[in-house]
Image 1 (tube, helix red, strand yellow):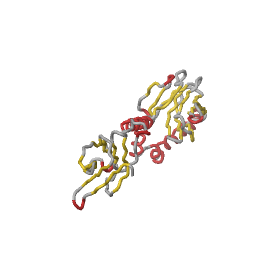
Image 2 (image 1 turned 30 degrees about the horizontal axis):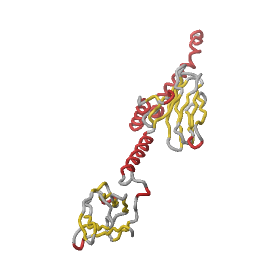
Image 3 (image 1 turned 180 degrees about the vertical axis):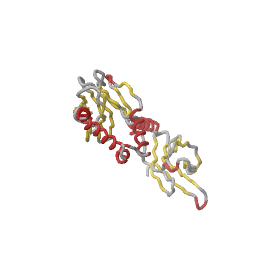
Length: 281
C-alpha cells in the first residue's frame, strides 16, 4: 500500500493543478471575459478585413514602396540586419510615435530636404525575425496606422505614401489655372485693359465689374445670375439706343465691341430694373 501511494504521490500536485486550471477556464467569469458581444465581433471583423486587405502598392522613385494612404493598414516588412526607411509627407510634423513592442523594435527619426519643406523619416529596425507588431504615428496632418513584420532576410528599404488629398489639390490648382486662362480678356496685357467704367442704378443683378480690352467689353455679374435670364442690353450712340447682341459665359456678359455707354434693363412696369454703364465715370 505504501508503495502504491508513493508511486502516485509525485503526480498529485500536477493533477490538482490541471483540475484547478480547468475549473477556472470553464468558470462563468472566465468564459464571459473570453467571449465577444455581437458588436465586438462585428468591430473586430471590420478591423481584421481592413488590416488584411491587399490594397494598392506601387513603385515610387528610387525603388520606394508606395502605399495609398488611408486605403488599408500598410504592412512594412523589415529585417534584423537592415533598416526600413518610412518617409512621411514633406512639411509634415510628427507628434508621437507609438509602437506595440518597444523592446524588440527600434524606431529612430531622421530628416531630409530643405528647412522649409523637410520630410521626416522613421528608421525602423527589429531585433529578430518572426515578429509582428503595430505602430501608430500622429502628425500635424494625419494619423498613420502601420503593421510591422520582421523577416530573416527580406525587407522594404524605402516606404512612402501617396495622398488622395494631394491629387485633389493638384486638380483644383490645374482647374484654377485653366479657368484663369479662359477668363475673357485674360490673354490681353494688363496695361491694355480699361476699367474706367461707372455703374449706376439698383438691381439684384447689378454688375460687379465692367472692363474693356479695346475691342470687346466685359460685364461681370454676381454669380447668382447664372441660370437666370440675363437683362437686355441697350447701347447708346449718337443720342439713340439700340438693342445689341451679346453672349454669356458663366456670370460674364461679352459684347463684341468697345462700349462707351449702355443700359441694362430687366422686367417691365413697376418691376422693371435698370442699370446704366458709362465709360470714364
